[in-house]
Image (cartoon, rainbow, N blue to C red; front, side, top):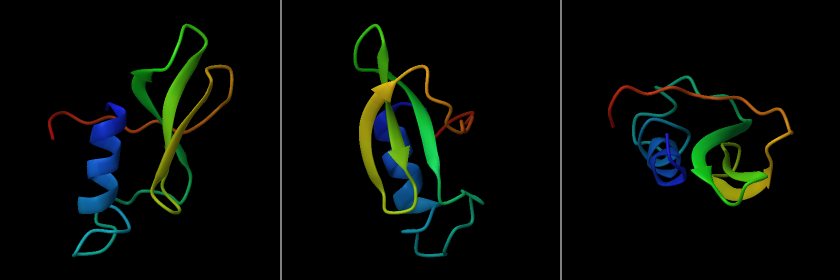
Length: 68
């Protein structure tokens, strides 16, 4: 998902969702499909719902979605 889709996931099926964490998302970092530059991409931190970018060489979790 894009960085905006990850943010939406956090607020609807993640820790901030009205029904709780029904998506089973870990309190961890998740890569998005949104690039920041040729060597960095955006990620979301699902522990507190923040996002930023980091080197693509860092290992984070990924979450696939079909449609959102």
